Length: 499
Image 1 (cartoon, one colour):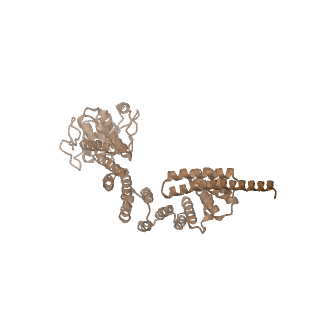
Image 2 (tube, one colour):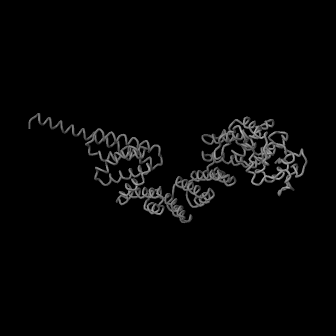
Image 3 (cartoon, helix red, strand yellow):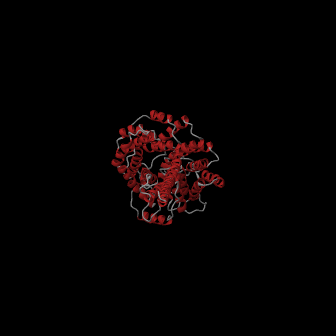
């Protein structure tokens, strides 16, 4: 062999070895990021996993583009598709995945491509495509891939409304998501709670899985049912104190939203006792103060809540501070100075009623306004607002309206009579109330007043409006000392309830 030929052969081998190294290094980088993504998924760090999958897709695409004839291309295409599917790029993932399914014969790569494609088809709402792709893998000899395929097939069936097929598919999967999904389907099929719960307990679900299931129970049945299930979960599982506290606070929030104040307060108190010096513990304490605020019967009790809250705020941080300041913001709208205007006091009572849902407190505030400012244009409006909130003095309120405020435009409107002064009074009030009540967590805000007829909540009084001459006798619950009695003459004072 000539020297030139030997030199050429040596150079060719060197170049081939160098090219192989480039391929290998590129593939190593792709595998490295894919491994990071899977590790982050197992650790529950979804943001880290998403970023790592995105980098996987980028590097895999680069390898395919630069080295289209490399033996690593089929695997790189699968990883590119998996990376895009797991990082929000399903719109681009189907190209490399379809290429694998059309050209690659290796079973493991085809099955991985089919699973990623099924997931993307589900996200795009293509149930037929998702079902077809999942069907490729359900018979796989690889248990992990078969399990995932059964889960995806169950999801397709559930979305189609075929719950029995969905339950069967979920039962064939060991995927953690399938476990809870099957429980949801069983409950929808009418399975008894005891059996479903026993099945779940034996598989030791995570805090997140329990939280999702409890939310499902609350949405499909009631918050009280979810709370009862949580009692059994806490009794029969070994969840850590932090997990227990978070589940308790979430349960308290659901109960708070349906105005089950006492039950919500109990949940918050228990959670705060479990982890007193933690973020969730601080949140539980502040939410407990929300309960105290909405169950206050009068402004004296509400002022005590605010005093305790202001003392607590310096020791808080993060979201608990924001929650506490939100509560303080609404309390400052309800607790006014003694010289506040009639309109301001009326609005404060409306905030207590409509935003805080502190109904007894609001009723007392409306009554106090009518008692303290009996000559105010809005005294009868306050009485009408108090009537459904204070049934204990309801008949006395009707008596005072009929006797003391018979000529008021609000009384006339309540009795169904037209009054030109009513629209003027409401326009005046709407202009004066041109602000906006603060937005509150777990509560409904007060709408911005607009000019035009607002009127007292005439239809919310819960019974037919009596006429001026239809007022009879005392209330079923005797009114307190100082309250107006039926039959008092003009000038009688509104009912008073000083607690």
